[in-house]
Image 1 (spheres, rainbow, N blue to C red):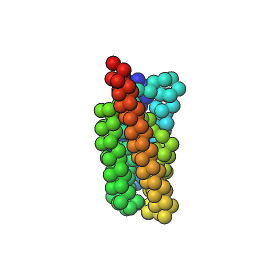
Image 2: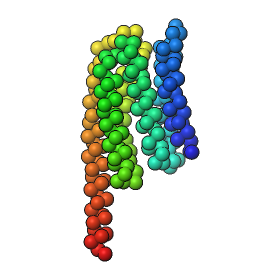
Image 3: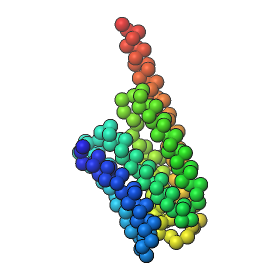
Image 4: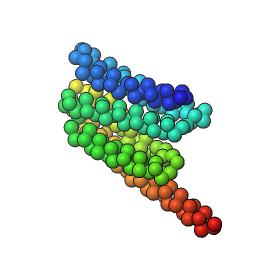
Length: 186
């Protein structure tokens, strides 16, 4: 396991830590939960930087990195929805969209050797979810600004889904055309 994958694995372990800290009942629980969340966000940036800078991008990394992001974001959305800091519909929408995308990714992985990397829309959606969750964790009550940022995050995520889907379809089509031309030439 290389360094970026180890950092992503560490981020997976931060997911339950966030929930435990958030609901700890400590007077500073929101602040401590935010710090766990911030460490997760920073480690996401760090592992991506190291992977690209030192050519350590792996198929495993392309799976566990977004998995760690999705689990952290979903957990934080659920926690903040339970406490009423964000509307409960947002974790539900996130789960439906991400669950469907994961299902589609596994279907795609059977047809191609590697999954497509994240794009602008996916990274933007993740960033906006991080901003909204930070606001929801640190703000004592739900605020209109959080709602707006969450709506933008959902919009980015939906656009990301369709762009990933289209890119995956093009990859599968290219592979099938290559197979047909190879088989036709024999």
